[in-house]
Image (cartoon, rainbow, N blue to C red; front, side, top):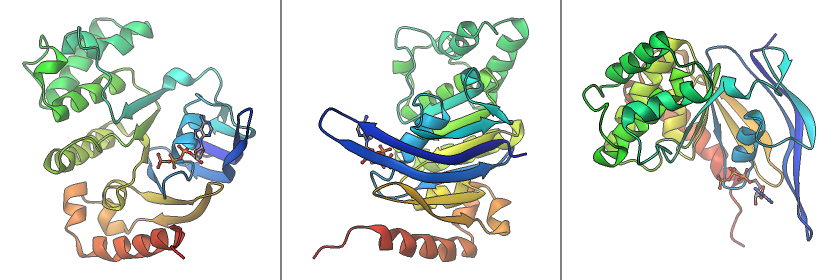
Length: 258
Ligand SMILES: Nc1ncnc2c1ncn2[C@@H]1O[C@H](COP(=O)(O)OP(=O)(O)OP(=O)(O)O)[C@@H](O)[C@H]1O
């Protein structure tokens, strides 16, 4: 039994004027504790698939099972980290990070202490009473991750969470997120346009082809890279070889100028 099983998923968006098939024949399994990235040209259905897994969109066809159970009714077991941090600007960082716990009625002394401890582990102690606007983009993203992890979701969905950050902050945050997910043994799916980020962070990279979105190829990352932090993986000789392979494959999917 796989932790997450996506079986023969198709999805078509219908409007009055048209029908767009965003996904076709998507079948993939994700194991517990695995980190999988979705990569592919713009419009190949990555976000649609993420939204389907998150239970935000019902697929036209197909099933998604989490621990062998259908997705309905398990939405609060899925956590998100998005490009924008979506912290409430008028709430303090402490209020923000406890909000998920409060809304899911999990807030008590133990969960509060655990959330504040996680904030410390993220290098954010001392900012509990500050407002989001007083923090840098990277700090806000770390606080958003604490809010997500505080509710102990079984599956984490990361939708381009580092794309709005400067390069140095992004590299640092990749390491921190990776280390934190390892500590918690979390299963995660990352949507990204950044091949390097996908390689450095993942166990497997799923490459999608467009029109309609299908799984083109699945790349297992070299064992030596999986053992390294994302930053060290980027500097390992195996990195450039797998980068070239995925780059060529991705390039072959881009529309050609006539
Ligand atoms: N709400 C919608 N209504 C109609 N068509 C949609 C809708 N959302 C997405 N699409 C179409 O579905 C296809 C897949 O879109 P999707 O956003 O999932 O791709 P993506 O790979 O995430 O793209 P990007 O990398 O640019 O974010 C595209 O052709 C898009 O135009």
